[in-house]
Image (cartoon, rainbow, N blue to C red; front, side, top):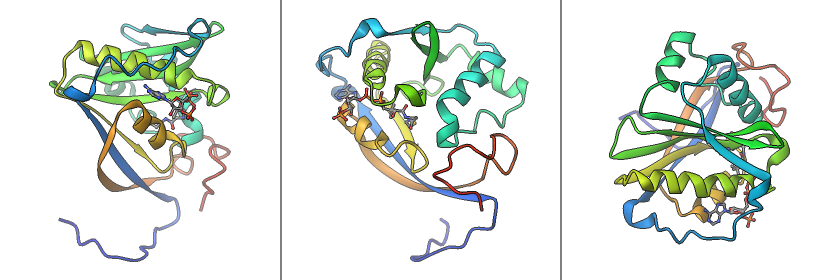
Length: 202
Ligand SMILES: CC(C)(COP(=O)(O)OP(=O)(O)OC[C@H]1O[C@@H](n2cnc3c(N)ncnc32)[C@H](O)[C@@H]1OP(=O)(O)O)[C@@H](O)C(=O)NCCC(=O)NCCS
């Protein structure tokens, strides 16, 4: 185990730190009754995208994740990324709004009977308009249909500040915390330097 110390740890320039929270939903939590009234279903639709293409996937990933410095998938070369997103146990779904793809829901069944909610988010202009709730209902329905032992995800302090509250309302329980240290994806050239101005570049 790493020697973890209380107090402050300096980071070199160009690096970021985030606190990661893991949340899970066990079999018995995945009740069909997470039944808030449907959030204006006609506004949004969700479709499974079979064998997603690289350009489409990277563009949607940036649309949703740029503000939150999502970069793990942008760091992968074509071959490595295709091996994940076209894997038969990885299900990529797109949320559409007014004919545009503006949200991503990615479920990873590679470690079944566990299912990971690997990516979940909507474009900045849709935040707070019920799209997340719409997509979460679908996520739980789809995950439940596979009868997993556990449905889990992680989120970090670079994500939207309401993300943890959102997941808890959806029925997930926090169970583990970690610190993630990473190269700032703007400094490393994976995202524009103007992305996520709430996190200054140092
Ligand atoms: C986190 C995020 C997905 C939330 O989506 P959203 O569209 O902004 O949220 P909504 O408008 O649908 O939320 C509506 C409400 O339903 C709640 N809710 C969502 N799903 C629910 C469910 N299944 N059961 C009960 N309540 C639910 C939400 O907590 C929220 O409650 P509030 O109205 O009291 O605030 C969105 O902010 C986002 O995409 N952020 C950027 C990317 C990100 O940070 N992703 C998460 C980290 S991986």
